[in-house]
Length: 392
Image (cartoon, rainbow, N blue to C red; front, side, top):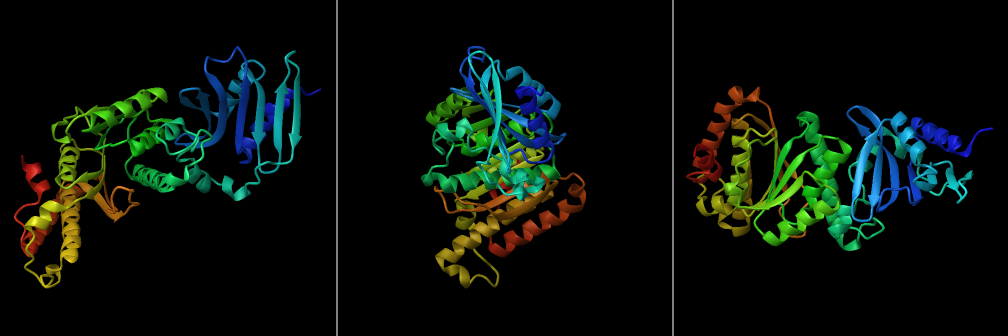
């Protein structure tokens, strides 16, 4: 005779190994469950060390995520089923399976038609990778007002949701070129309400198990207090926010620098910190390109076009960010400049990413600096602000 719990565990193992596991849920907590724990959600997650099972422990005020190997996951289920939780569900594209315990401890295992008819191709490694970057049921998304209590993205924040996911896709791509060490120290300069800061921490901590130490730097104390309170509520222990001018921020170590929509020369201040600290990865989304526009007096064939304000503004943005990319390359970085999803606060949608590549330093520095000098001469620019900061 096969016991119901054994059937459930065998079904879980089979679904996981075959790529059929959509989700597993533990519910109906008993007095033996940790205080405040409501349920546990399990799903496959691809880590550097292979395919694992992510356990999302849903407490009343926070989420905790832990990753286990398949054998470890089965052991965890064996310890919790019938003890801390009376219900267990397994969802696959072909069938749903349920394990239920009554008050006497008697178990019943049943199966039904699938409730989620997800196509099998969704379970491929590539697509699973894209869908796993951010779990919409994460508590911090609800506390920041992006989702409702059911983990559904609010209609008014669909753009923000897309922006966050695109951001994480960008980060994931950068990490393929330049992996971060365990315990990486990261600064997000001009973190605002922290949407992308929380997303980055969640991804690095819970998906990649990198145990990052992230600091959000923001001038507005009210936003800093709000973000720190939220980080505490969701159990993000190594995510903190400080009220400080980025010009006065001097970390003891910096592995990754983020500066999204820092206005005008604030982007240059952030870049200078990242370059000086030899950050492995730098990500900036500049806006308000005022410094170069004020100085720019074109001395080339574009001069007739730039008498029109809108064209002059756009050219100033191109020159500003182009020189930034060249200065990064002159300091040993491989750079990319591309279109990013804009926020509701600004129409600016250019992102500059840079990954440290020391091999390029000697061969590229002289060439890049010569290109910067040529651009300044051509557009009548005295000095780019980032140049000045780098020689201070």
